[in-house]
Image (cartoon, rainbow, N blue to C red; front, side, top):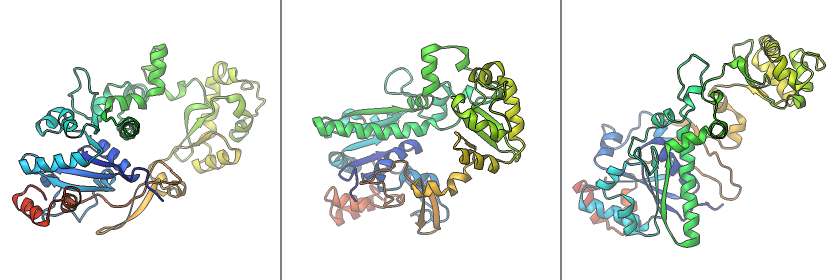
Length: 401
């Protein structure tokens, strides 16, 4: 089978997981992603005491963010290192970075400098707060962006402190990869490169888009304060109930007229009960009474009992699980959302797979995350035409590892 992005070369100048993961996603679909590890910082961060690579523990975060990549380790602060970078830029389709504007300028990796080397370059940057405005140079940290988004105060129960979910950066990951692919499509049609910027602020706002869009349309206190579990407007949609064994079920049946005939019997209620025989009665006049009845019913049986009944009746409801469930779920494995791999030092390991299915050009795990400079000699020779002697001289000078 072919790879969707097989002819795309990406220079990866990233340091944070969310932006590195965007490059890895493109690599999963066949792009040749070259991670540029800068010296000496990367040497101090990634090398083990033996001077080569870690073998005693699995750096699962680094592995996830850098699989399917090649690594060239180079000192960009010297002329030979700069020459290497410029040569790679001329042969790349995309530069993807999360570095600060100041660092990009200092190292000559800003858009204006690199596009002068290759005008059709797609230059993608993951930022904290976007490319414009007074806050554009604030640190690109997800929790800072999430704090401004409006979601954190409404996640907990009333009276509890705001909750940082950490999911906004994953939206940003996907949008950064999407921006790259969209810009490549535009270039294929027009021959023009361009800048792409996706920010953590935008990603967090996108993650809260349903509530945020409602607030933009209507405003109101309802959308800026947490709602108590038992204050939900619909007892059969968005309300959580504890089970006998201390777990929780979630109901997602907003159209109660549709679901009530099949749902009522499993919780011991008569569908014709005059207290609850209409949507208005269930969600307005007798809402609290129905919540109390459901609370009592779900406490009488363990979670497994309720999941079985939900499945048998094909109800829109389920049991809330912890991370152990997707880790062992056959459905996740069959769809390659979870993979098993053989680590050269640690044996059989489990890792996240691919969130997108494509029938003819699927994602693949071609290689594990590279050691520091693992492919430096290969890249310098294959892409830039450096001789073996020149590469050895550069290594001796500390320009590359």
